[in-house]
Length: 289
Image 1 (cartoon, rainbow, N blue to C red):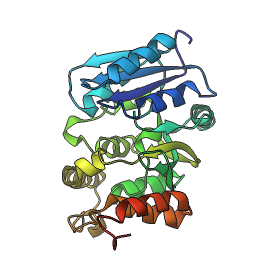
Image 2 (spheres, helix red, strand yellow; image 1 turned 90 degrees about the vertical axis):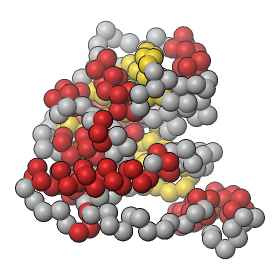
Image 3 (tube, rainbow, N blue to C red; image 1 turned 135 degrees about the horizontal axis):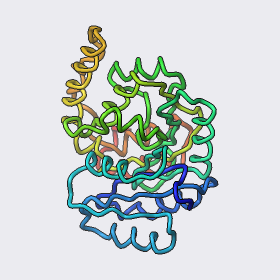
Image 4 (cartoon, one colour; image 1 turned 90 degrees about the horizontal axis):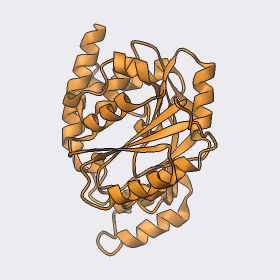
């Protein structure tokens, strides 16, 4: 690794031992090698720290930052402020980056100097890493910002991004009061400073599981998103449309995540994954697939 790498990968880790090895290995397999990897251990109580230490001993590009459990916002901000590179790549400890992720994104920002944030399509997977569906995102700034202002639906996947460090710091970093929607908050602020983009290729496998924030903090996410969108529209001097109000988000949702995964995989043509979840769901809920 050079004294000042081209990319600093920032990954918060809290009790991520179940998937951490796969996430870290996927960074070491990158075709682009000029990076450092900042792993912010946010007070983990499982084997996460031991796993991080084993990887750090094997690769000098990996740095571990330990702290008491303070949450994702403080972990991310600490990693960004400690980073040496001009570009920050986000990574979560339960996802897997494809080998050409960093190379593809770094080339893109070199060719598009006005771009502050670039994400990509993702392959949604189940806890075992089996495919569920490909999630695609718009490529152009105007469409991304429009979606962000209209409930953040399908705008930019947080763990896929490569973002300009100085722009993130100038915008005020991640904000604690919008934890659990901290990514949408940052994108909306950066959208007023430069261009947002997505590369129309799958560069990351995004793992879904029962411990994800969306499953555990859904109600808090919706309330903070409501507050964020009210603020973002007011700053732009525009009225918030009814579709952005989240008024319908408290409706009852299907209780079976296995049934949902079975349907998603079947519709995307991943029939082996669909059959696995259909079989797992059948004993407790035979009619929900």
